[in-house]
Amino acid sequence: MQTTLKNAIAQSGIGLHSGHQTQVRILPAPPGSGRYFIRTDLANSPQIPAHVSSVSQTVLSTQLGDGEASVRTVEHLLAALQGMGVTNAQIEIDGPEVPLLDGSARIWTESIASVGIVTQTTEQDPEETNTPTINEPIWLRENDIFVAAIPSPTLRFTYGIDFDLPAIGNQWHSWQPSSTPDEFINEIAPARTFGLLHQIEYLQKSGLIKGGSLENALVCGPEGWLNPPLRYPNEPVRHKILDLVGDLSLLGTIPTAHYLAYKASHNLHVQLARQILG
Image 1 (cartoon, one colour):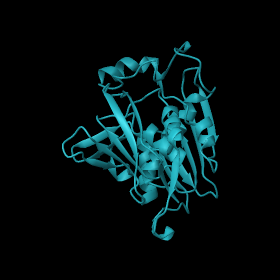
Image 2 (cartoon, one colour):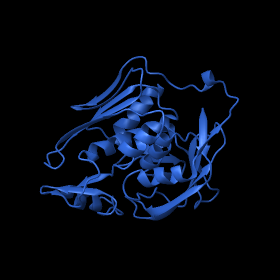
Image 3 (tube, helix red, strand yellow):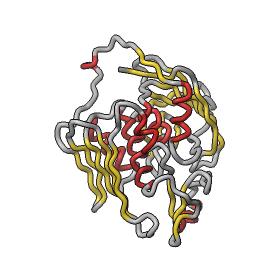
């Protein structure tokens, strides 16, 4: 079954890393087109497929590119489309980075819900969709950091993080999507991105997080959170699941499996997606 939006939606805001103000319009797209970006501010409006083959960078966010055109920090928006069940979408953007909004996927999911989703008919044979299957465990590891896809009869995401800061510490969360978007809307989409106070100056000097603020990201220091309250006691690890869903959405269809990650990154998420595709 394929789906798209009933009507167009739009959001604008600041990009986390670039600090640029951009506007995004998401429009209905025909069956079989998948999810793809169009840079409307560039000559000839180049199109960038939201596919793992388009990934060009994974430093603190996921960036897609095609030739000279690129779009950065796509993971929250793509997670919202995936979590809401939107398989075909034309995403028009007038700048280099998707706006961070409140640091989560909540505003995107609310926008999608406000217009609704329509089921599309297609003449494509389901057996011709080439959706990969997970028949054997796939593991990627760097010291004690890992991601894995384990054969399972149901789709599940389990994530663990571990930080020296007492307010975060060691957190685990496991989430199983339901047949409707409700679980995603309530349990994962509102979880915001987070940063560590002692890293902010270094990241800014490196040309990153130019658009970051206490309005769009949780910040944690030795004494605790600078901008409480949290939406969940374990909001940071829930956000990591959000990132993982967004990155794995670049497969087009996420194969049924148990996805397990610990202290992982966008880079490892994307490596796992590439391994799944073979």
